[in-house]
Image: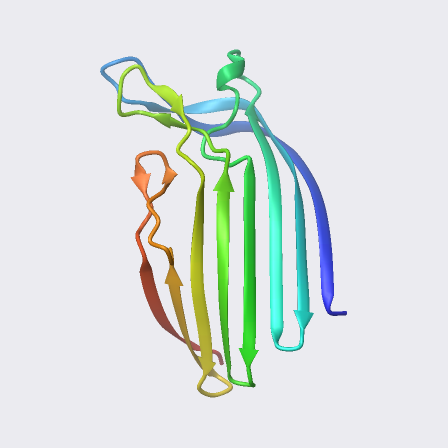
Length: 177
């Protein structure tokens, strides 16, 4: 009862998926209807709880294709990483508080560079984003929570040309009734 392993195999066929494509000059691009698309993949996940420690990890392999695209080099759907990994380790510090650390990584991505004409497919690069978080329960109904995201202040882009935020902190007060 302390651990769990999961394996999920998934697939779906999509009709009328809304996408974005380059358009002939002078337009920059336009929304388009992707008549047929398919996503499929495998996700492996696990969790282990030992005393006050809670460890979680997951890996996803994804194949996402535009089945309407005649050019085999352009069939892969953009902004969908081939590999995604995540891990978290949390520690309960008594009844009222907990701290944790985690990371998420996206690997083998494709996107489109709309900055130059003609537009071209690009590899925006892999990234890993680390975080720290904690919680202190003030009472059974009130908790103070804090997070530090992009722990190492990495420069990366979720979508090509759209930089992610740098290191950032947040503090929240949660009230449960």
